[in-house]
Image (cartoon, rainbow, N blue to C red; front, side):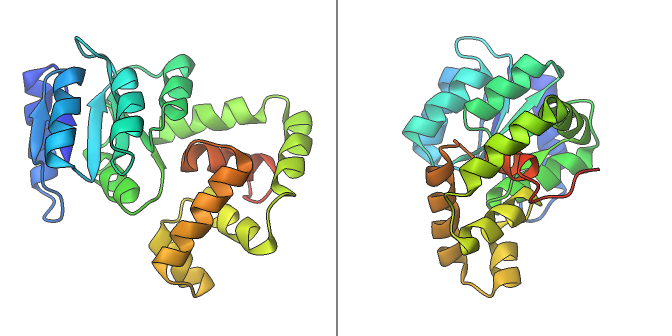
Length: 215
């Protein structure tokens, strides 16, 4: 994976946490967004962990560039900020995960593993904010969401519901008795039909449509 943060001590701390995980390897580190893009092109990491505020090119812009230049790289945003504008921009930019630096170190490992497996990951604080946003104007949003998912086949709706529940492609395959490649094709088809950019947006839509139980 690629780690990008302009604070050397923060990078060292994150690297130390990830070093405790035998299945995670940091192959490159960057101190700004432009350097992160160059290293991503060179190393082709599976996951990029990006700080939101970096010099030359911030994490949000870097994520958007990565989506175009290296769409197979899953992006997790790391920040000390939890304002709604950052959450919305990060998800719109194609990020699959969003973490606060004040969170539990184990969340960091869980997020890397989740996005690498094709799932999405939001820290509990971020997830709460997303649900609050979704819950506002619930009835009108629910009607619109149900109309959108009506375009899906029954199998695609099953896949969407499991995406909304936070399952990875492998886990969805296990539930539906499908090979992982077939699940990946279904997920791509669902994202295209619903005209959403990533699994997080698909999961929110699944929640709005009532496919995933709320709290």
